[in-house]
Length: 321
Image 1 (cartoon, rainbow, N blue to C red):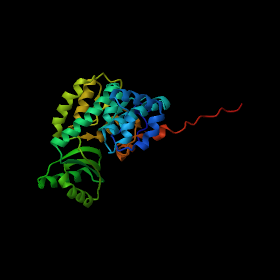
Image 2: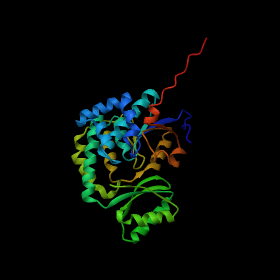
Image 3: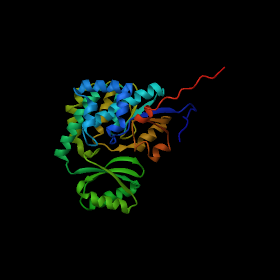
Image 4: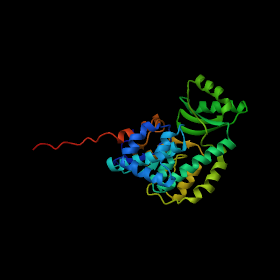
């Protein structure tokens, strides 16, 4: 684990906003209703949307409903505010793989919070319509315990069958997300098992492929052009290649590139290590990017979750004279 910078100074800290994972309302309800930062942000979200977000989140089924997506962003940002106040976190960098890049842009000061709420709501509807019309048969399959060379073997076999595929995300040397046609899932999952791997979750709609250029263009014109992109107060590390982004226009392009470029998490890890980061504070529930070996071997990983934020603070008792 990285414990010091090249100059011998204390390790830097980065804050990570995780990619979205299904989260039941019951898991975060107490945090949403009690934490002052969450209550403040939900009040702004309610005013922005014109309805009570928490009520819609509670009442709507589905792992990735628009209300669940917005709430995930709100909760992650509230946790980051709580951590800054209570844990006195002063990050040198911010990053957010996949869905987490939206919250990262807000935390860095590039996007106004209300704009991010509007953006997330509009993106959910736009993406649902786009994929239903343009790519209804595509899914993204998560593949664990299969090295990259074997993933390329799988892709070669798919190509021999006349099937298209694209790598959507590289999480670690043996954890990949592959986008394919839904019709080949049974074959692909059997083949993954034959290689000693595990088929994890299957996502529909799919994500992160050069095939989705039409979506990128539509989002740029219909959604992003109406937003204000301020200069970041913190440098962001792009999840596609680990580059450091230091302008508002650069962050806008980074978010747009998220539709069409592969997420390369090991590149983010390498960039943060090179920058002298030794500790990651993960603002939100994450069961993936900050849990894999390439992350845990490189950094001290500090989860900042609704559960940890609701624990009573232990106060030192005064020492008797």
